[in-house]
Length: 184
Ligand code: FES
Image (cartoon, rainbow, N blue to C red; front, side, top):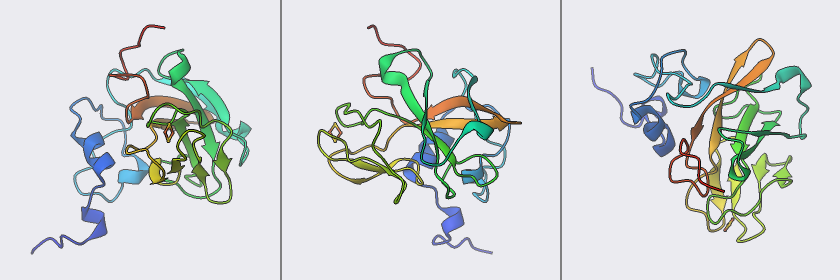
């Protein structure tokens, strides 16, 4: 039997491929966005080296009202938000798979994206510097503007009502390594 190369379940996005190919993955569970991807069953949410940090509670979230948190460091560039989008999203947690989290600095030149949630289209932006806009239902993919990299997505895990951050997909602006805190 041959594999259909056009089967969408057999195709990884560039970001999923980079996430899967990292050697530093710990086996805990299969993320929702990878379910159905051949070979992904044994892979996990948590990236080795990242802390597992409680960042919120599911019951406290309201659609359209982002909740701020710092991760993986208490550093200005590590300002993130949890979003309850109200629609299923890639990497989303919760019964509706609609809870996601992203860093709030534009990956182009660090423009501030906080307060720029568009609840009609579930996007963040436009960035005040060069108008990049990011799709929060598709891992923060760039949909317009100058940015060439997606918005870093914070990997979330749900334990009861508690939400934990367990990793970062994508490089946080100003960092050369997400796990090496820059000075200042
Ligand atoms: S800094 Fe956001 S588009 Fe340039």
